[in-house]
Length: 193
Image (tube, rainbow, N blue to C red):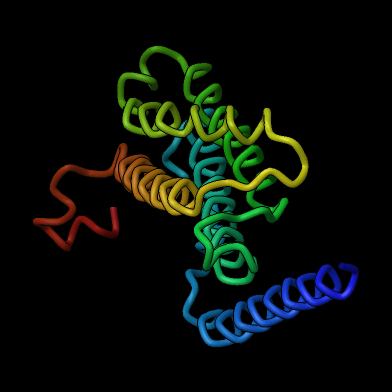
């Protein structure tokens, strides 16, 4: 009976090694095609200090979300359980929890804005996207160390992060245009003003 157990254990180890090597090879093939975080730039000078801080915070959050998407791609590619439709990598759990905290921090910063500034900035879409992550965040926060998570959940989280990035980019564009001359695009001679 022990030879049967040894044979099955050897088969299991070989399958795990093959899946891990497969993941590493796939990672080497796709790592150069992954998104890069946006460069950090200074806030536009025409913004008030609270809005300038929000501009910098949303740029930092967008960079964090790009890095989170890259991490999730690495987990999805390298994890030996991924071909079986599950992931066990602790980086998935850490990434979801950290991103949840950062998105909540950004939303609290929006809530702290004065009412005049808050009316110019709409964060409801980001709030809805954050709420769509709640069930996955709850599952991750309550899971034990080696609990598997569905690969579909990882893909859904990754897509949600991408949509939050797009919303943050729209907020940044809105903040950058805030206070600019309304006829600047129609009259290039006003660009020097």
